[in-house]
Length: 136
Image 1 (cartoon, rainbow, N blue to C red):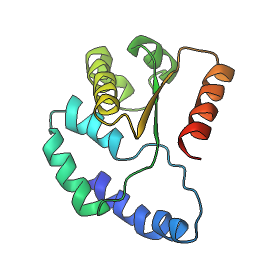
Image 2: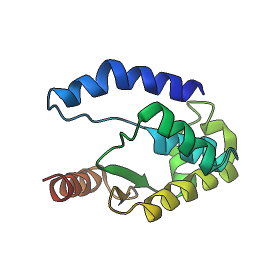
Image 3: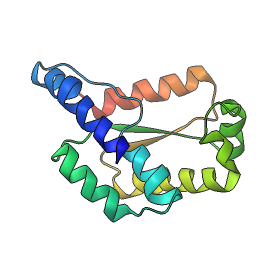
Image 4: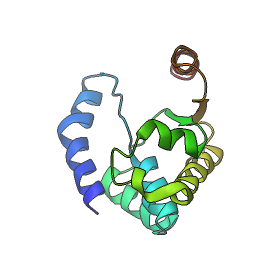
C-alpha cells in the first residue's frame, strides 16, 4: 500500500502535470516492479496489484517499459548487498526475474527485454534502439 500511496502522489505532483505539458517522463521502476517484487516474489498475487494499479493510476500506464535482464547471480554481484531486497537471496531474485520476464511476455507491445549481460555501451545502444523504434 505504501508503494501505491507514494506512486499516487508522484503521479499527481509530477507525472500527470508533465504529460499535460507534453513532456516525456522517464521513470526508474513503476508498477511492474511492484508486480514483480510484491505480486509474484512475495506472493501478494497479480490480482491484488492489478486492482491497486487500477484505483491509483486510473488507467495510466507507461508507453514503453524496458526490462534489463541478466542472471540472478550477476545481478546480486552488481548490487553488492546495498539494500534489503539484495539481501533476500538467490531464490527470491529468481522469482523476481521470472516475474519480470512473465510481465514482458504478457505485454510485449509495451515491454522490451534488454540483455543486460552485455557491455554498458551495448546495453545503452539496445535501449536507444528500442526507444527510437517503439516511441516514434
